[in-house]
Length: 160
Image (cartoon, rainbow, N blue to C red; front, side):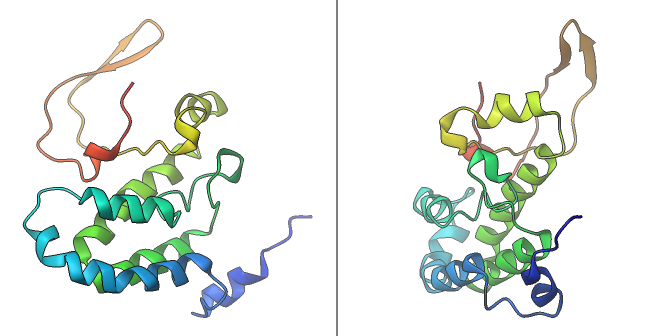
């Protein structure tokens, strides 16, 4: 029988006191506020902020544990992103975009997950504009090519 993590009930009731990720996000709020002016004048997430989010494990919250992720619940992840927004909404947005892609990949085949997370100590990040150009089926998979104007966090994503 599947056992439910007891924290899920707490989270559903709005009690995140047992979440290490929410606590880490709260610790980052003052730093994000301090950098907000500079962040808003930059067209991408600041490298030093990305490093803090990596160190806190926030990018990898929804990534499976077998690849070094937190394998947290979406509700805990959403609360963490919301807390980050108290410091800087753009940093929270980017953390959310990159984080949700890990959740998506976690529902792909094991082979796809291995291809992405078995390298770079599982720290690979994914981003997309969700507006692909035409996709062409080719031998061995699909070919997507074109130019996109924006994909939040793409500069932090690993391309092979």
